[in-house]
Amino acid sequence: ETAQRPEGCPSRPDPHDTMADDDSWVLEAVMSFLRSPEYTTPVMNFIDNRCTVFDQDEESKLEFTAIHQEFVALVFKLLEGFLGEIGLTQEVFAEQCDRAMKNGSEFAVVYQQIMTVEDFASFKRMMAKRNVELNLELLRQMQAQQEQAGIDTGGGDTSVDSAGGEDDYEAQDQRELEEALKLSRMTFEEQIHSPE
Image (cartoon, rainbow, N blue to C red; front, top):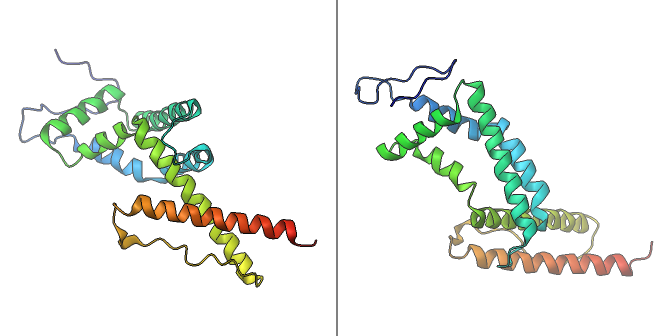
């Protein structure tokens, strides 16, 4: 009935012993890992390098699914490596997550965050959003360079109003995307018409 404790894995207290430590250190350690550069750097690099094919369209391309599968594999590889470093198996970690969910622990968010990785719709939205953010960042840099060179971009304000709320987020994204496309067209036309 009780699983064998893997070698090197710290012993777990009896879950029925109310005086025992609840092993929340496992989920706390994983939560810290998910915020550490060891996790965030490869994950953000993957997102930044692969988001360029994602757009705001409702239609999903086969390529999106393949990229999502690569992302899931990366996240679980990083997590498995970390669990190995602290001497835990995926099974022990899964038990801790299950217990946290059943007990309503504050660390249940760790499980939820990891499971969100497997949600394709959330992944697609995240990748499309990051693609827009990177394009806007690039266009703002181009606009700043043009303004320094004395070229009027006519772009107006492309800043994001954080007080707009979640309901206005998609509308703001659409306005920014339209502004980005307008600025991109203007830059392209200026490059074609400018003598070199």
